[in-house]
Amino acid sequence: MTVLDTRVRPFAAREPRTRHYVMCAPDHFAVEYSINPWMNPDVPVDTTLARQQWDDLRATYQRLGHRVDVIDPAPGQPDMVFAANGGLVVGDRAYGARFTYPERAAEAGVFATWLRTQGLIVTDPSHTNEGEGDFLALGSMILAGTGFRTSIAAHIEAAAALDRPVVSLELVDPRFYHLDTALAVLDDGNGDAASNVAYYPGAFSPHSRRALRDLFPEAIIATEADAAVLGLNAVSDGQHVVLPSQAHQLAEQLDQRGYLPVPIDLSEFLKSGGSVKCCTMERHR
Image (cartoon, rainbow, N blue to C red; front, top):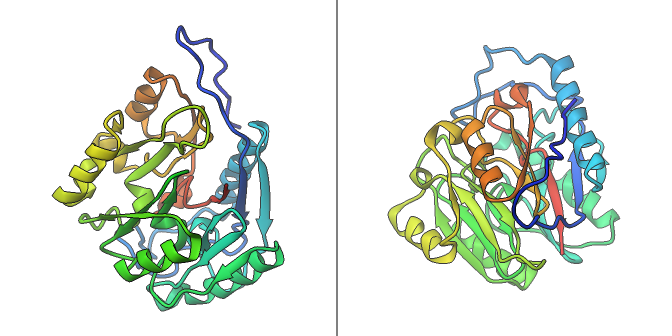
């Protein structure tokens, strides 16, 4: 069980905001194929431990005061536990997913159907995209990854569907095949604090690194070692940052900036190239 840090900092505390998350139970989670550099079907998943780790993540969100909805997994979809990939929700609108690989294609319809049952207006995509894997919403914009799993055309389509400007960022390192493996939103700008992020520069093309420097001059720059354990696959409520427990230096950097790091072990999911954020879709304002 994760122990929350309640130490008093010598500087003004950051303010959390209650969030609304969507998760998918890992009933069918396994590594049955290889569609990213992390996946090796010859390395077995401890399904009992994976369930314990997922339960710990959900319980952590609930202890922090957040709402967590759980969608039922579809048989034969071992990666559906990575709910972030199922779409992007902003307000009462959602932009659905259209997966790159046929192994995950069936997930898109399951997520879109569920989102409609929640009363959301869902745009079915014409272009390849993998939801919040490559779309990270801030109050004033959407950061959108491309290079491996999501097309530039999907960026344009998402901007129209959600009526929010999109900033395109090019990923160049196959280890960081989704934007949410290389960049974490720490403050979305919807509260009193300015929007801010943490990211690993080596995952991005030179022009995208320039864009990130210009947009987020106060960003936390993660080390390659922390990025390599998917430390940036994190979820923040503006104060608490839930992140993989193996990302030790990133946790220290967050602490120094006034955030409260909440380390959690999701090592079984790392075998499939996922961690905290991959398991978490957010219903954004």
